[in-house]
Length: 313
Ligand SMILES: Nc1ncnc2c1ncn2[C@@H]1O[C@H](COP(=O)(O)OP(=O)(O)OP(=O)(O)O)[C@@H](O)[C@H]1O
Ligand SMILES: [Mg+2]
Image (cartoon, rainbow, N blue to C red; front, top):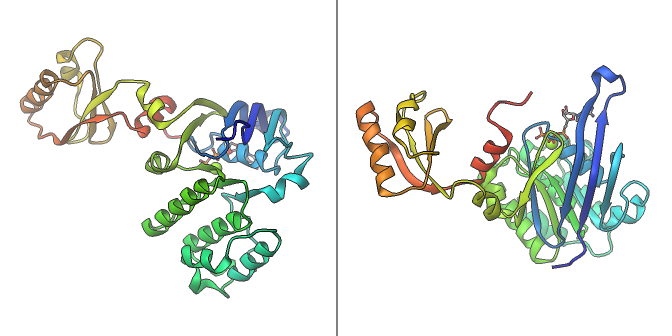
């Protein structure tokens, strides 16, 4: 792996709005180093500052403080040198709505010295039937796929994909994953944001979790999941069970939580005795524990533990 990081962000601050009362601190002293040649997933609740950070790396936004280097270049002052080397898929589309889909892709390919084969890419992303359709008339998922194709067709060294699979059907999601993996195989660095924890688990070599404008943790999925209880016992049951009596029976330091309505997790060293305690409590409470299983902490658990369970405005 290339020892020079693909992206280096130190102390990045980005605010929106001018009136002091309406000021939003979207990014608040964010530090992040992204390794070259790997897939890094940036996760975070809505409004955490992911898109703002990525758009700053792409040179679309100027930092209020801190430094950003992408492939060793300043995205604002050296954008002419940087732009041809990176591929960008914006969350907000960013594709001219009146242009015909495949024509636009061909045009973009011609702007690059060593583009990918457009026909193969079109085939691969299932855009064959969209040839003369304008971007605005494509379905949401087709627009996403076209935007992905536009981001990679120039064979960039580094690709930023902001929620590339949002709203895609399972087939298109998998086609996207395959494409992203092939990019890595070809030595391309990929930075991807997603709200799908399974996607991050499947794809990413490293994961960074952003909350309230800062990176709050970073590492491989395995490293992040190892941070807390090694394993847990889970089961489904009726929502809203009173877990107080169960917790009293558990060993010191163990916890029991309802992670989402009707899904329960007991965090403690899992051994046969713990299993007996939990099933005994279920029997006494008249609850049939469905899908009872012993599991490792998932990325979603880590995410919810670190960023909280309340909805973000
Ligand atoms: N152009 C803008 N003007 C004013 N506020 C903005 C603007 N863009 C983003 N914000 C605010 O900055 C904060 C961070 O937004 P950002 O889009 O970076 O979040 P995000 O992590 O990408 O969220 P999501 O997961 O919903 O895409 C939010 O509070 C948002 O409302
Ligand atoms: Mg976003």
